[in-house]
Image (cartoon, protein in one colour):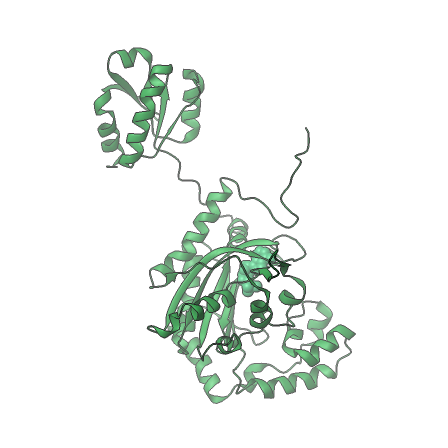
Length: 423
Ligand code: AMP
């Protein structure tokens, strides 16, 4: 067999049916709890000014230093394919003045994200996320609400083994004392040059180092929850109490940090143990200082992003049946040119009446067309033979039983609509 000339770029893949339909169902399931909770849909461009991410995500993060798809346009603008959704959404909120209306602003979004990562299972250069952001409230109830909505989405998909990890990173009140303590501890370790440099620039990042030897050395590192101010502690306790009230099982993970710099106070991650090293199926947190960082007013916020691709892998790891394409109810089988012409009109009418319908094309013979009808999963075949047509009828055949009856052509649509509960 000859090789195709073009292939999807490294680290990317196509989602073809039925997997394409499955990922659509995953995204729908993630969005449903948000839509039912009053979140409005927002769509932003897939690329932004590079400076938005450099400033918003953090200059020293892996995303900004190593993973961005950045380029200069023909007009000389420096732009980057979005590696994440929060900074763009906040940019859009500020630009469109949504923060000047009723607060909080509750938004959800769904789309493609791009990171130049080392590809492996569950880690791609193009992936899709559904995200939610709430701007303009520092109430811990919002943090808890978001966690509950994500857990409900995973449950709706049938997932049983998603664990919720939570931590608090404190706010500007708690962070300096913690940063000092952490730096003092890290300077006492025997670290390579690059990591030692990171200790001085962004010590929290070192906690996110996945190398086993580093994780071992960090076992006795100070944890941020021991440094929380009274207000930060109260916020954290309220989130945890509300989750308990809502019946959500969560695990306190004092070592949880995430790869973006903007987080304050609540931080959480959803992990699935069936996925190997890329175990995070979603995550998020509070980012009370991000608006100011982007030149906006004080506007506290909290949000999450759930990975659709990894969630699909998690469903497979649990052995769940993936959501299937909806299929059709009626499959039309015209035999001969005149019947094909008549069938076209009937198919259109059936579809407009709400009966999901497909049709055999290209003058297929009865045998081939009936095979296609079976494969389509339809309940009924509507057969239009030349003799039927001459007699002004068509045959409705129930495919499971083989039961067949002739129906007047002008009653076919109403009959099928009635039998299938459409119309
Ligand atoms: P993050 O913005 O890194 O917190 O990502 C949120 C979620 O998106 C993660 O928990 C993953 O499920 C998913 N995700 C992030 N990066 C990738 C990637 N490179 N490939 C596939 N999924 C990803």
